[in-house]
Length: 464
Image (tube, rainbow, N blue to C red; front, top):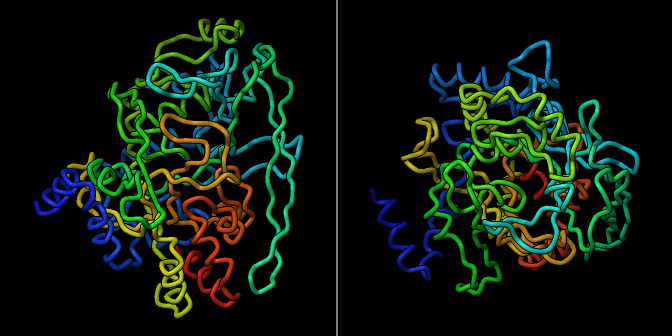
């Protein structure tokens, strides 16, 4: 009861939002980063386990949902009717195809390499009915670079990298790389002027049920859009259209916090990434200019491709993916690194602790204190990280604070150490050095540290 009283008071008096943030910041971080859902695993499969506290019923649903997440869909008619319906346009044949081992995607190393775990968001100036980005005529809001037989893929995106040199205050050199994308083989007409594109690597999908269970009132109370406390950090909420509830809600998923619920996230990815319709989005998405796509969709139309029963199991799977336990929490360098993390200001956005609601959708997620290292808010990250593309209320320079739990397992799970929305950072140091805007002060404090201090910080981050 006490939590609801506190939150209600904060909403009534926004100036006291800092007190809730302070309350959360004072909670010690435990090695069970996902609360009671945490698993003590550190293998390549670390992101694939069911929550430790899952009930027998939900374990069974999770297992079935895992099949939906990993199965490769085929075009209609397929050998297995329950998993046909791929396309007509798509990016990958399965969820697992983008989210390898449920982990982090990466950008191609150079041109002429496929985007296997990355996609390109598209829009033109203006907004849609609910304030969403306005799609590109003939192409929609996502470049789909693959298609079934008889339908042309929309086109391809290629990346080249530009290097920029820099130095830490102690004289240690570093180099940062920035992507430049070009587009070719555009099959549905020339792009209009001022097309905006934004590359997005796939993020890890662990702990999403917990993040969905944080009360919206908590997020509203944590937001400080006008920087009333004058700390230089002014996180704010995105307000987005949630198709399942047919209502505007605070965004919390996606690089721009442009999705409010896991139902919408899962259904949107099924249709956008694989061309699979669901109870949320009933039809395949073909632009009016894509005649072959429309004809192929009509020929293949046999109702829902992912039925309501299957879709429910997929949702349970995503809700109950466990968070791995922190490793080496008692090591001196990890403890020193956590202090550095807080002292230089990283915790101002990557807030260590949140709490889930007692009315969460699943019992396993109710009333949890957990440590995702995010406030789920939008922050201005500076011009260098601008994608030039607004998304609902999120401006081109604004990005949702990325959860850091599991970040130290990236190399083991996905065999790379590339970070940020477009995979430009080749390691954690480069990821920090790209920060600007509200994170400029923290970035400069990091750049001014000596190597031993930086090593302590990386020891802490690698333990998460």
